[in-house]
Image (cartoon, rainbow, N blue to C red; front, side, top):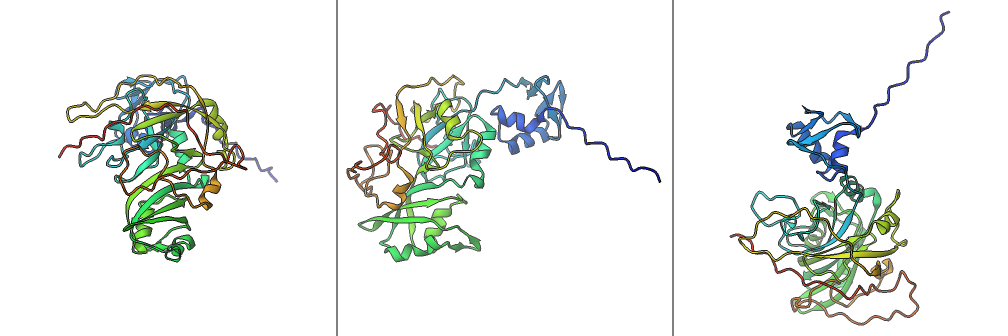
Length: 353
């Protein structure tokens, strides 16, 4: 009887997929890179490719529309206070101003981690690394995103219970939310809301389902990263060492926050005639050791202050901050105090009518 031969092992392809390399270099997200390849924008060793099913190595020469792909920089991450009225995408078919039209001049090419709605404001993470962007957006991270929400109406705590149990809106099931009724102020109420999914307009849709209308929404944290005292239009970089400690191979959990050193970036003033082109200059690291603030136990506390990071000219509907005692707090529990040095917020961009 003839002896059966084992099948030859499959050959391992050297290198990495071309779309992943483009994403790592900060050209675009992996999905966007695949689209660029399919329309013929990418060439490898002088030959245009139309399929992303290709592995490349550092020996290969990659060009995008004839421009040689630069060596990828180390992954970097910025905290950015997105003002309301800006679109979070790279371009807008309606011609509205975007986040990327109004970033500080000295930021390199960056991508946003997730999005914020046109009329939402607050913390938006920016990165130069497509793989880091993809990892931070994965639902498996389970990171809590916290928001300060102002709604029209005077709800009672029992009115909010459906959100805590999990609510279905238009056939779509939302996970349970952490919801704290902070205060009633005239015809409005301020809430603190925590979610882990981040579905499209999730908070607004959920509030509408219980007969409340959101008229202001500010994201104040994304996992271990806090808005702090950033003002609209400002950006701060999370330094490389802290970035490795916070993320590493496995992103740190909410209770493992580390000190952070961040460089302040202030957006340029925008006028109707201002060009929408940023100079690709190198960001310079700032000084001052800070700590990531606001321990996660704050979600169970009833805050009465205005949303962190709001400029001093906030609308009259914003609740004023109340002093908090730090007695008995651990280092991670202690409120974030900032460096005491802030650039002025940029003026609100002028939009074409």
